[in-house]
Amino acid sequence: MGELISMTVNGATRELDVEPRRLLVQALREDLDLTGTHVGCDTSQCGACTVHVDGKAVKSCTMLAVQADGATVTTIEGMAAPGDGGALHPLQNAFWEQHGLQCGFCTPGMIMTAADLLARSPDPTDDEIRHALHGNICRCTGYQNIVAAVRAAAVAMAEPRGAATPASGAAAPASA
Ligand code: FES
Ligand code: FES
Image (cartoon, rainbow, N blue to C red; front, side, top):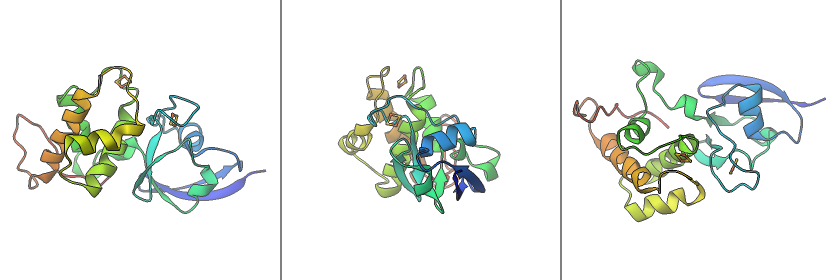
C-alpha cells in the first residue's frame, strides 16, 4: 500500500498513490506518462531527468515522489505556452535554431536547467551558462551550440513581447 500524494504538474493537480521509495522521475514518466523527462544514468550525474520543483531545477532521480507532495512541478511538456497557441518556449526555439541538439536525449534536462538559470540571471555570461549546465551531460554536441542556444534564448526573452524578428522566430516569454 502506497501513500497518496498531490502535486501540481504543468498546471494541473495530479493525485498519485506511490510507494515510499518511488522516485519522482518514475512517478512522472511511468505514472503520469510524462516521458519527456529522461533517465540517462543511475548515478545522478547526467541531468537528463531535470525538472522544476517549486521553480528550482532538480534532478528528479534524486528526489522521492513523496517529497514532492504539495509541490508545483514543471516538466519539459509544460514549457510551451498553452495560452499562446502552443508556441514553443524561447529556449526550445533557440535549441532548434542554434543546433543545440543532435540526438536530443539530453535536451529536456538542458532546457529545464537553462530555464532555471535564466530566471535567476537573465543575461548570463558564457561562463555562467557553462557553470549552470555543469550537471547536465551531452554526448553529442560538444556543448558549444548549447551555450549559444542559451545565449540566444536570453536575448529573445529580453525582447518586448512581439518584438522578435521573423528570422529568429522567437516566441514571447513564457513562464518557466
Ligand atoms: Fe537523473 Fe541521470 S537520470 S541525473
Ligand atoms: Fe545527444 Fe545531447 S544531443 S546527448
